[in-house]
Image (cartoon, rainbow, N blue to C red; front, side, top):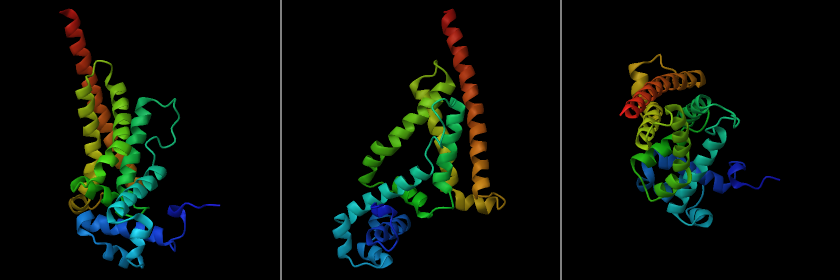
Length: 225
């Protein structure tokens, strides 16, 4: 029997609070959202926030965790790849999964907006978010990038290349409202998102190959000295 409150019907007050709080926090941020507003959206009384979560701050942390669990379960960075997958295949899955987590229209839109809001207006919850979720993801991406760049790449070079790949993905999430006005033909449905991921992958692989060649030339030059 399923007893997880996050997977029960929306008639469950705790689940309703999580969903209502997620929408409110995504729109107004942690500081701009009141407990009263959340409870009005959820159709509960104010006491339920303390009863289920112990206050607004703990509710916010629970909403972040709830959102991350939902998106990471639906779109894990490996997307079902086995351990035998190549670095190129792992990078493709990583990029596509990130694009889907940021822009998928088939889930409540507040998930991506909530994370964007937390990055732009960080709260005390960000430290835990970085340690528990973001740092492991960065480590996974840097491992892939390091394999593609080759053994001569230095840690700083790997880090910068990984940041450039993430930056491309995040751009479409942050600038979507502008993009659809500049380029109305740009689609953000499932096919459109896959196309964006394919472009980011092609662009990134081209850059990584160029860096790899430079590192090899650097290595040959050092060996001649």
